[in-house]
Image (cartoon, rainbow, N blue to C red; front, side, top):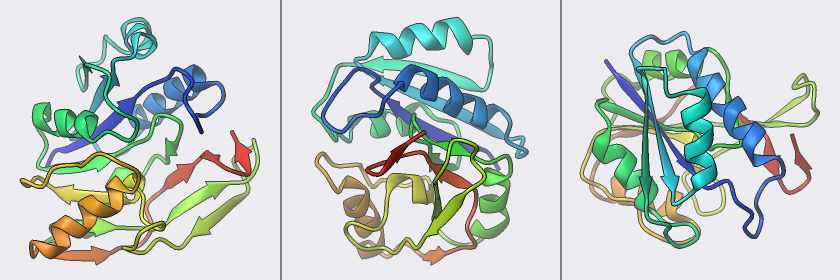
Length: 201
């Protein structure tokens, strides 16, 4: 079963943005390429960002399992990028990767081993505490506002749309649950959060 990983990307400065976004974007895409799960694709959606387009053209255009699309710049925390990514994707399973984070080699494989009959799965992630990536702190993620993040959600293709605004990940998850989609928390895959308020790797 094919997995489509959606990456919304805007690499220019904005309030709360990461440092060295170009290097982190490249690192994130490379972490997709090293996945052990074979039937996969990455959809990079540039939120009106020329920098993202340039890095894709120079580094990743040659890969058949990476698609790129550029849309008009939306509002901060816009849902348009993820909606467009899902629209052009081929996978029956949709996962997400932020452009400043990293997924371990077995991330998708672990998810696919557990999603089974569920429409939606969510999972804890790991906060990176040092530049060596050897010190990690597992964060307990739950389906509530302020806890769940886009990176901790994988779901089967459906008609639910991403909305605009801060907390859009919780709103998306809640919409699926309210509409009766079957969900479960699974054993943590390997999602490494590298950008957060107390550190930036």
